[in-house]
Amino acid sequence: MATVSIIKATYSNPDIEILLEPFGGMKQFVEKNEKVLLKVNLLSSKGPDRAVTTHPEFVRAVAKAVGRAGGKPCIGDSPAGTFSKRNLTKTYGSSGLANLAREEGIELNFNTGVRKLDIPQGKRLQRAPICDYALKAEKVIALPKLKTHSFQYLTLACKIMYGAVPGLIKAKYHAQFSRRATFADMLLDILTIVKPQLYVMDGIVAMQGQGPGSGDPVKLDLVLASTDPVAMDIAVCKILGIEPVGIPVLKMAKVRGLWPENMEYPLRAPDDVAYRGFRLPNTADHLLTDKNPPRKGPVITDKCSACGDCESICPKDAVKVKGRMAEVNYSKCIRCFCCHEVCPEDAIVLRSVKFSNSYNAV
Image 1 (cartoon, one colour):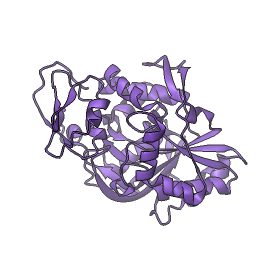
Image 2: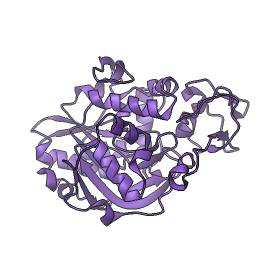
Image 3: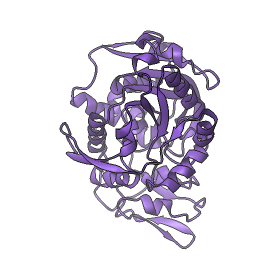
Image 4: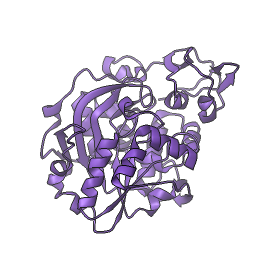
């Protein structure tokens, strides 16, 4: 039996204590003086109002709950791009987490060390580099953001620990596992070696549309908690009216026998908080229309500032800055949408384009 606790809440009062009552409270997960990593979603350096990162007030509420239980919270993630102190400083600042850390006296991770670990249960990976910050914590509480994702359709609990992989290696894996199903399988491999004790999801202001970096904020007022990431993600799909097996990582979790036989909702059930009209990315239109998956590709618009972030992140060197604008070589593009994720100007849109290669991201 997998338990998913669901409540309606706001950033001014996230009600973490009420949320965790069905589990016996935070004290069931944290012991006195333990270092507890709050693994946030810290994709890129955008403000909290953009719904790209876990909201600082949500992080504050969980950190205080950890403190009341006797633990010592710290905050960490590996954003897109180079895993460096400079990039971390920029992203912590823009996301509002640097101010939160100063106000509450919470440690921010700046350790960029990496270790290679064997993955005994891996289906796609047998060994992978994992960030030290995730390995040195005595406990891990994951704080995923409820968001869309142009490649994996939704980015929720099952994907949150991908941030334990150092920045540019994530782009490498997009090239290595260029099909949605194999990429999703790889995400589940990572979860077998870096296992949070608890997942607490920020769905108060979520992201719909062209996520994970350029979508639109949508007010859902939802907070969820579970010890089972698959159960949590299934619950989100039920709330949004999406067939769970249509989400690549949940489909592969089903194949691997990771779906719980039974799920219980001790506070509110998905039907109690159902939200209709949630917009998926246009790469996932087929989940709502039963049409064939579209062949969307990244298109550079005139918002482009030629900053080079897209060129740096592209695992296939398909994007190049030429003069005052980036260009996409569609003969190389594998439609991983990494460029779309990291663009600071929201200058990359996903539209139907003609590809000259035979790649099919199914």
